[in-house]
Length: 248
Image (cartoon, rainbow, N blue to C red; front, side, top):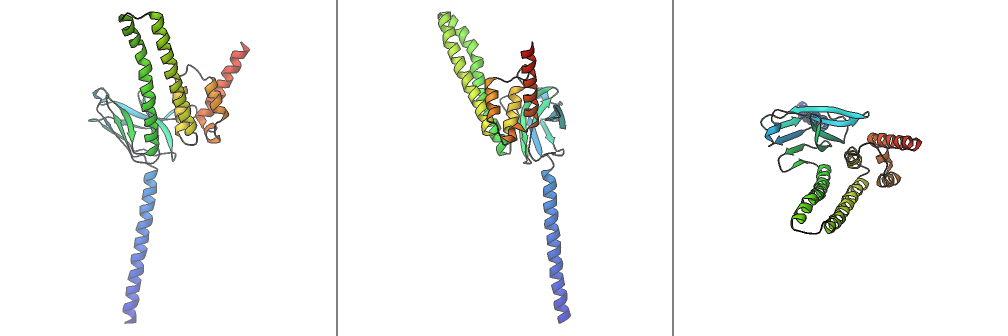
C-alpha cells in the first residue's frame, strides 16, 4: 500500500515536471518569436507584381536592408530576425521609399493599394498612419491651389485678387501642416515615432539645416530624442553647414 502510494506520488511529480517544462518551452518559444518579424503583406498594385520589396533602417549614417521579399500573387512577407525591440523602418522598392513601418514585435499587416498604403496590427502604426492621413489631406489641399487658380482665371476673376486669396490660403495650410508635424514630433519624442517622422521630414530638405522650428524642437527635445543616431547626425551636419556658410 505504501509502495503504491509512493508510486502514485512520484507520477504526480513527474506530471508536474513535464507541465513545468512545457510551460518554460512555450515561454522560450514565445520569446524567440518576439525576436522574429511577423509581417504579412498584400498588394493590389499590378505593376508591383514580381518586384522585390526591402525593409530598411537607418544605421551608421546610411540605410541598411534588414529583410527583403518578392511580391508573388499579390502577397509578400518579412520574417527575418528583429534586431531591436522597437524600430522605425521604411519599405522600399528599389531606391523608392513606399512607406514607413514601425516594427515592435507585433504581427503586422501591410496593405498596398491604389487608394491607400498602411500598416495594421499595432498602436504605434495606428498613431503613425493617422498622422500621415492628416498630413496627406493638407498636402492635397496645397496641391489643389494651382488648379483652383486656373479655374478662377477662366471664370474672369482679377488675377491680383486670385493671388492674394490663394497666397493667404497657402500660408494658412502651410502653418497647419507645420504645426501638425512639429506637434506630432514633440508628442512622440520618447518613442520611435518622433525621431522617425523627423527623419522623414528632414530627408526632403536639400541639405541638413537648422530653421527656427527645428531650433525650437532641439531646445525643448527630450534626451531620448537627442540621443537618436539620425537626430544626432542631422544636428551635427546642420551645424557644420551653418559654420561653412558663415565662413564664406
